Image (tube, rainbow over all chains, first blue to last red; front, top):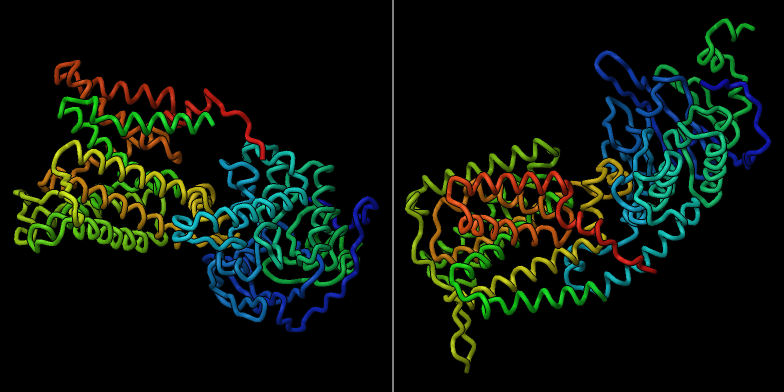
Length: 282
Length: 319
């Protein structure tokens, strides 16, 4: 586990300092209210509330088992919460299905590498572009010209996404043949292809080499600059502190801190959560 | 270019078959291969693309056969309307199976389809009033086309029926190809590859699984209708589990998730038992069949077509 007290490395892009007011209801952003998730006697989330306004990189951090991934699962519809509400873009999306939530522009990636393993990199991205196409069965069977036009358009878009993440040279490789780091990039590309307005990244840099991490951090920042709001779960504190505009800290299913990286890093409760009481006293 | 030439040669060979296959029994084998090709293509939509194994596919085939036979015998509908029902009714059944399978994947989907086929088969045996039970329905009329001003074209003979089946195989193949080459096909494959990721980028898993089950059932039903009007007799045998197993063998050995695989598998595994019958005594037939099947799967685990494709890679396509 990384030390939360690391200084911001100079090689990474610095936060652009977007204002991220918290607490205000944001009709265009994400709002999580009193979210609770119990597994038997264990409360993975014990009443968590926060909002994420459009723009910027917000990181959700916390020790292992703090409830970060559970929060992602509930927000994106992969798990139904025990209690509480999730709203996005002015709509209550609690218990919506993941595919419908994606349709609103809320797209996630997964903690464990999650690509379409048997497909080429290009086909991975083309599959991710699903929502940008409109051909149904009827059209697929009889309207060949419409299909051809759409395929051309989607291929163009796929190429742009691959250029963006730097996988253009790999596009004809089978995804499962790529290195671990590259597969994670494919995953990012698939997520981006879905044209998210808010992208939830679950540990995009886990298991990467330091060089790959730096590339990914820069990429996340570029994704944000292209107008996509990023909500990031990450263990690498160097990366979190380097690219986040705002940091939310979860511990034992509760939100214990919320603020700019520099504030959160000094927060005694955060230090206690990560390092135990002895360090907090020092 | 090379692929196009190969397709043309194949079509010429297939289209001229009745001219050089004199033995009616051999022609019958080819017709059955064609019917099985449609069935294998239909199973492949589910198994090869969405990754879900239907072990009740004979049910859709049988419902199609019974639908067309009953309507044209008992209600004296035109056999073509019967064929239409042979597509629509299994389609409805496929839709229902897809809806029931909302959350069922893998082994649960297999069990659901097996149970469905079991129930349908029992109905066909026991609902005497409707299906005539194990005695079956004889006297199913042949398909015929009567265009004004032209002599009636009947598909009663094997030669004529062969062309009807060939047209059906081509139609099923083209249908699958167009589907697979589109956004819809990619959505189906996404379900096979990684359903959670598919959902997270907005692919409605349930919708596409229901769709695949429905289309697959419709194609299998059409094959059933063709079978009924070809053999002119339908009995509960159409629901035999063996038929389903044969379809699975054809798809898996031919190459699931490919377009040519199921067709090649269907031809090979329809002709093979007949060839073995000519070569060996009956005690050895099934043994040889089994050994050949195991050998094929051992040396070409992904199927014949993918193995061939790996052996003879295409020239890189520039785009």
